[in-house]
Structures are given as C-alpha cells and as structure tokens.
Length: 315
Image 1: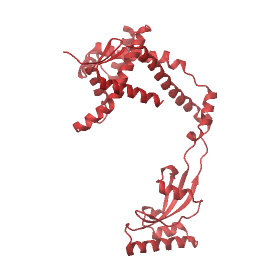
Image 2: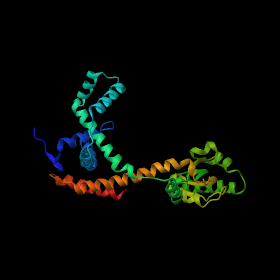
Image 3: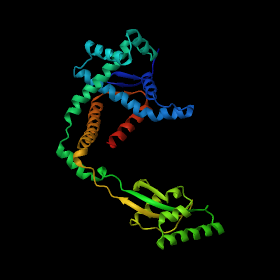
Image 4: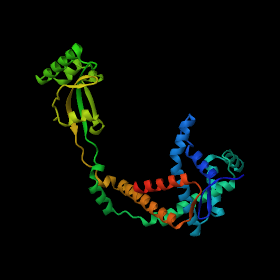
C-alpha cells in the first residue's frame, strides 16, 4: 500500500502513517476530545510539535549511526527480560501484548534502538559538554534572589454588608450600616466581635478572618486596598459587587529568601536543565543545517519552521 511521503531527511522518509502514529501516541493516557471538531482542533495544535520531534529524532538517530552506535543482541535481550519481569509476562504473553498495539518483536527492537541512539547522542554530544559549578549556582541565586523568596502572606479580617448593585433605598441603608460598623471599630470595639455581629460574609462565623493568603493571590482590587494598610489598620468602606466591604490587615509576613545551602542542588539541576535544552536546540540546529531536508508538504514545512523558531526563541 502506498503511503504519502511528508518529508525526506537525508534520504530517509517520514510518512503520513508515521505522523499519524505519533498523533495517536500523543493522546495515549490523556482525555480524548469527544466531538470531531474538538479532536481535529487538538490534533492541529499538536502537529507542529510532533512533526518537529519526528524530524529531530530522525536526525539524532542518523547521527548515532554515524558515530557507530547500535543495539546489541545482548542489550536488547536484557531490555526484553526487564519488560517481562516488570509486567509478569512470559514470551507468549509479551508477544500477545505487543500484538495488541500492532507491534512485533522486530518493531519493539527498532523502537528501543532508536531511543537508545537518541539518548546516547544527547549524552555524549550535548550533556557531557555542560557544566554547572557551585560558584555559578551561588551567582545565579544572588542574581535571581526573588525567585527563591516565598511570597508575602497576609491575614485579613472583613465585614461585608451584602446588597445588590443598583442604588436606591436598600443600597443607602446598607452603606449606612457599613459606615456604622466601621465607626464602632474606629471607636475601639474589637473588629472580630463587630464582624461576628454584623457581617454577611461567609467568614462571619470566625470573626471575619480570611487567610493567611499569599498577597499575589488576592484579586487586584483587594490587593491594592491591602497594600496601603499597616498591620491592625482598618480600611475605608468600599463598594463591591457583593455589597459594602471593610478590611482590616490583621497580620503580614515578609519571608526571607530560602537558605542557599538548602536549595543549591535544585538550583544546579534547574540551571543545568535550562542549559541542556539550549545546547540541545543549538545542536539540533547544526544537524538541520547540515542535513538535506526535502519537504513534500508545504503546510507542514511552514509549521515545522515556525515551531523551531518559536522554540528556539523561548530558550
């Protein structure tokens, strides 16, 4: 049966069937859209990444072969034995399991060998050339100290006098009630006691207590009101969609940065991975530049080139 060729990479073919297999695999283990339109949209969104991955992986496999790597019978046998032990399979059960996915032992060997070649090339040509010293980790920590500082938290108390928007006598009465509540607090009464007596908020049962909550998680309007308050200070009566609202800043924490020695390993791992991805992208770019890539589908070529450009810009 003739299969449509999408692209040739140094003479090796990526077909429509290859792309469709990658699309099917991409949905394995995830919720599949129920409507045909939603499924088509999801496939379209994944296709640029999948065709790029197919081309890049083929380039890495080809490079691995050039470097003389291959999967020996002994290595493949060890991998197969591991699969059987992990799944409790004998030879017949493994063959049956592969058949469910339309695969043979030869197909499995091909997949395993490709994965091994990709990993070996990345390890030798990319990963081994990346380093991250303790000095560099400290420098990164100091240059990005806000990244390692927990967000400030606030604990609030609130009084809400509920009334729908729209004005009129009910609105006026609610505002007067809210002003009276704030006046009682300003006169020295405990905010929690006034909230427990007068508030319509869900927090009424706990004396209007809200939090602790990260300052950045507050709605922009509420955050602006909170940021101008000192601890213990009560804000003005504010109109909100739910009614008239009064806030008190009960407490605030301004955390110190995490100790460098406690997070040094995670910094090293994070920066190493960032460098690895950047180096891998550069390495793949060099492989693409040296390769003969012949597209038979201009639409896919455009998606490929756009995705590569976008991915490189994001690293």
